[in-house]
Image 1 (cartoon, rainbow, N blue to C red):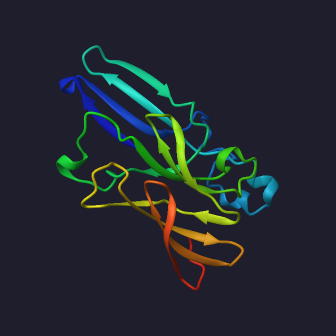
Image 2 (cartoon, helix red, strand yellow; image 1 turned 90 degrees about the vertical axis):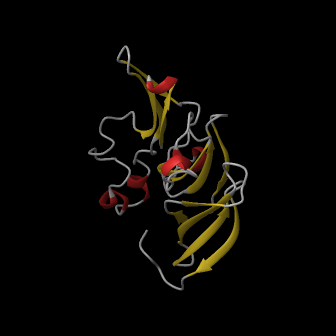
Image 3 (cartoon, helix red, strand yellow; image 1 turned 135 degrees about the vertical axis):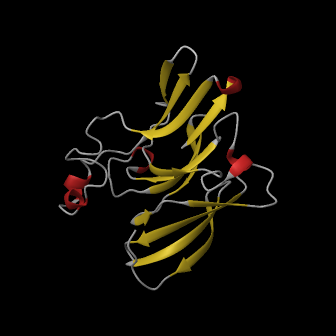
Amino acid sequence: VNDQEGDGGVTVSLRLCAYKEPDQITGEHQFMRLEQAKKGREWRNKLHRGGKFCDINCNLLDQSVEVDWKDEIEQGYELPVTRYSRSFGSECISEKHPRYVYAFGAFALGSKDYDNWGLFKFDLEGNKVSSYYQQDSVYLSEPIFVPNPDGETEDDGVLLSQAYFGKESETKLLVFDARNMEVVATVPTGMRAPL
């Protein structure tokens, strides 16, 4: 998700979307095994629940490494973004990690059903999902954060996410207020587009 340097370059901290299960990428029940997902709901519900936040803190002087899993946040997720994900130069250099991270995930809000997807705003100061969007049979894609150029807070901007509305068999572009995850615009495509 982000990396940071502190203590005059003595420590480096990486915040990752990581997996505790060693077979997450290669295992029978890894998140993106589409051939498994096509076998039906029973198979989909066996899939991994997605990544977890993990901070890896490296001290360059004594060469120590500390791993800090953010287990307080139970919601799994994939393809996280922040306000700074597409930033360059000094705008993305910081002494701390971003507070807010946005990502989609299955098994929304503790559901036992893979088909229950959502788009989440994670508050990593409070270690929680602070707001979300979730609707039955709506499958969301990786969000893109577009900052408000006059915004004064980290979460001032909009999120763009392509969503497949299963009941309507149509893909739409959803525009969310990144502060509260409310839909501010919906752009229908009139067709189904791949996610």
